[in-house]
Each structure stands twice: as structure tokens, then as C-alpha cells.
Image (cartoon, rainbow, N blue to C red):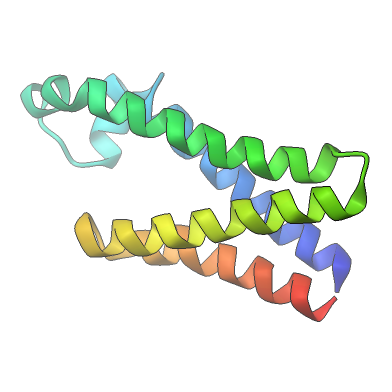
Length: 119
């Protein structure tokens, strides 16, 4: 069960690495298409999306610290914190932006938390 929890947590981190890239480096091209924005609207939103991408990068950082921290208890705390933040951000995104965010972000994070609890 522990291995499965690690795998799902890694999946959450990888999803967020992709989101960071979409909201920052790839926003003018692929990100704009993924978010369904016109060229004009994308240009207006570009600074805010870059900022949002930065925050998603912090979620990835929390999960990575969880894996890499030499103290297991501290690492677990970072991982749980990161997964909880992802879950809450996904709920907020589903309410304010697009319902599918719930399934892309929240469901995998909650699954990882549940698997950790069962391990």
C-alpha cells in the first residue's frame, strides 16, 4: 500500500509539473489552447497565469521535499501538507473555474492521502 501511495503522490507531482509548464513557459502556445483562450485574452491573462504557475510550483516543491527530507516524519508532514493543498486548490478551481479541475487535481490528491492513511 505504501508503494501505491508513493506512485499516486508522484503522479500528483507530475500533473503539477505539467500545470506549472502550461501556466508559465507554455502558456502563450499550448497553455492558451488547453485553457481555451483567444490570443487577446491570453495576453491579458499571461501575468496572472504565470503567477498561478509559480504557486503550483510550490505545491510540487512541497511534495519533493516530502520525498527528499532525511527525517521520515518531517518528509511525511510535507507530503501530507502538499497533497492537502492540492486537494483544496482543486476544489476551489472546480468551484471558480472549471468542474473538471476537481477530477484532475483533487481526486488524485485525495486518493494519495487515503492510500497513505491505509499504509
